[in-house]
Image 1 (cartoon, rainbow, N blue to C red):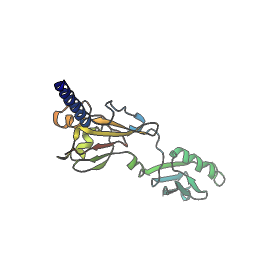
Image 2 (image 1 turned 180 degrees about the vertical axis):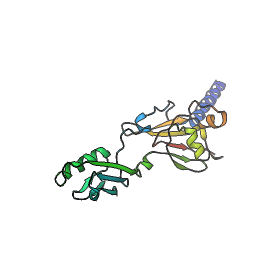
Image 3 (image 1 turned 30 degrees about the vertical axis):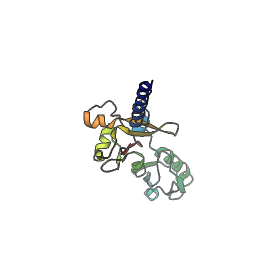
Image 4 (image 1 turned 90 degrees about the vertical axis):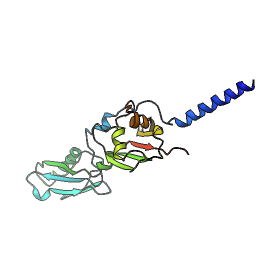
Length: 208
């Protein structure tokens, strides 16, 4: 009876250790979101540089940054809402307002500097890595690419408890377990998942 109790306690201890060693995130692979990886319709953001061109009216053509309130200022018509809209939508509004001053205005809005998008399209690596970083997303980038860009893990890391945090379509954030040690030490690429803009990879410290 005592031996059975001892074996049961040992088994419970093994299960608890296994639970502590396992990542807390979901063991399923994260589903890639094509809309996040490839921008099909860019929406203007604060600090983007916008070129407004009015055909045959160079005096009305301007190159301006989007202000913190999301607006730009255009000669004759004043402020126009640009933040959160596509260049085509902004051009259509400017063109409509200019009709009161210019006969048949033809307007083009071109983004010359995508300053706001730079931060939205980044992948971040934090925790027990050599250099925690925020790197621009590149098509085809994987977990391994991002971790190597951070200089790899430190000697204090618990790489097999790494987690990838990704924003879901409903606005929530979901954690996915990454067996990073299997990738780095054994070349097992089974969970070397593709990353996408906005992902955060966190490598925790191991327990001492």
